[in-house]
Amino acid sequence: MTATTGPRAVDPGPTTAPLSAPGSDRDGRADRRRAVRLGPRTTAILVAVSLVGVVAFGWPLLASSGSVVVAHSADAPWLFALVVPLVIAVLLADVADGGLDAKGVALLGVLSAVAAALRPFGSGHAGFEPMWVVVVLGGRALGPGFGFCLGAIGMFASALVTGGVGPWLPFQMLGAAWVGLGAGLLPRAGGRREIGLLAAYSAVAAVAYGFLLNLWFWPFLTSDGGFPPSMSYVPGAPLAENLRHWLLFDLTTSLGFDLPRAALTVALVLVAGRAVLLALRRASRRAAFAVPVVFDPGDR
Image (tube, rainbow, N blue to C red; front, side, top):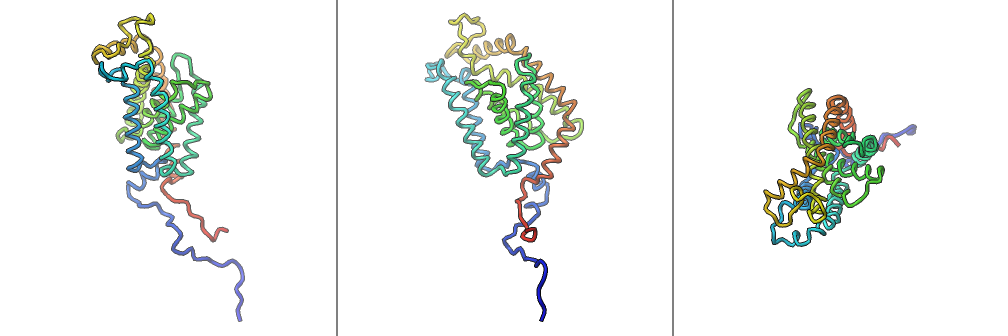
């Protein structure tokens, strides 16, 4: 008679998931580098949120003279300040439900905290805001979906840190989310070309962000309140006239903040971009976001 002693090997059986990623081709490797997977439903919601954002920002330029929005031009920014966070919350809830695993949540939390911690170093000082380099490089290294979430959550967290919570915050969150999304959608490049591409994108995005954010409060600055008529919003005026007024307002008021923001972001990308991208991509490869976590019964 023989007795069985010591640990016994256990057949994991057919319920054990494969340890390899679902596919070893280029698409599979790309999926493992993306912390946020954009499925058809998430992509559709993302497009819908962006369309709402375009209306929320662009209604002063897009609404016709007979539009109800123009008739309530003093109330419209407040209405969109309520609508925009709701649609962003819907998108983030959908991403958290099916496109973001525990490892992605952890990485998103770390980078959002870094962005929030960096913002006080430059907030209120001629537009110097080092947090943008985190949004741009995070979106580039980890994909457009992650960049969108990082921009929105990083801006929200930084507002809590700096006490900058107000009706402008939803617009800031959406603007920052678009910056991260755009970084992830840039064409493929490598080496110095990639750093140059990111530097150019950072310059354009930093200035565009400032111009875009001006739109949310610009309709309040009417000539009736003593603001120069040449830069004031004129309800129901032709697109060309309001567009000219808005650009003049941007160039004479906010460009002094937008250009330093662009210069600092470009400088940080040129100095630290390569090292940060390598670190983020190494972290994403080790995290293997698309690979399901499997517990081997033999490790008990």
